[in-house]
Length: 410
Ligand code: PLP
Image (cartoon, rainbow, N blue to C red):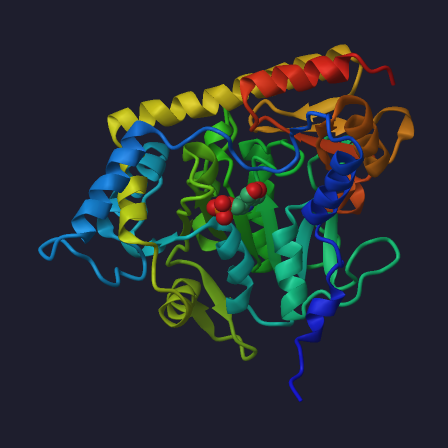
């Protein structure tokens, strides 16, 4: 008789976006004329840009000719893309990377979900709360999380609350932790850490021989100075941090799938006898068994992002969404709501009015404004009483949604 991985039974039964879909579907059935505007899920709405499409097409054409056809590509990704990544995303920041430290992948979600596989089961894992659910759930599936307590926290994980009381800046853990997931600019709160604030985490990791798993999927949205674009801007971070980047949110690759992960060669993990091993080699070892690379046309399309035309186009994409973010911030602030994020990030984190809980506020906006956002509690217990609105819809829908919400009184 086949047995299942019982860790899966420890997952909360309804992934938050499935629950949102259920409620919206039910509402739509009962109110077929309601025009619903979705500002919940973090998917983009603008199409791929011209430079990217041209790169993509060229890649596809090459696949159709015997002389240029490509079979399996290099595990780490094609050099033509890796070179552009290093030259454009790291060299200008004063960060030196070797091409073998860059791993092109099919997404920051799979990479942040899979990275835990190269680490031992006894590691203590810390996550900020609220948090992008993938970090928590991938560790639960692996068996590192234990049972969920009545407080909504898995007992085996260390939660680092981020709320308005601490300006959404997580405090260093009070008990030792080994793996620390940090995501900046943050999903869901839209907040950022300054260089000085991030440097404290690097120092902690160096002192405790911990590893920081730094998700920078929203790096392109940083507008202010003194906000690090890469964790490697902090001295010593190459010895303690893995960085995840994605083309999903800067270039609209959510459906095209391309991202990359930096695993520096300096990074070491230890066996139970204290012998050190290269994490770069372990991650590479995992790829050679479980991954066969990103398709050639997709990598050709990703390379095109780095052309002069491509860079101009993605700047426009980001500023389009950031204009939406500004509209959302202004409208909600005028209503007297407390809002966070939306300055260096496409996410606006709203404190619900009148002590409403997250789902009450969700239902209110759905019923009265036909606007769908994401209840903060879906991202962790410290998200209760908050609500996430994204800037990824069209300008027209964003304006319409804000007009509708502005007509409500709280
Ligand atoms: N990391 C964070 C923090 C995200 O919010 C998301 C998507 O919403 C991802 C990663 C997923 O990135 P990708 O599309 O590259 O898998």
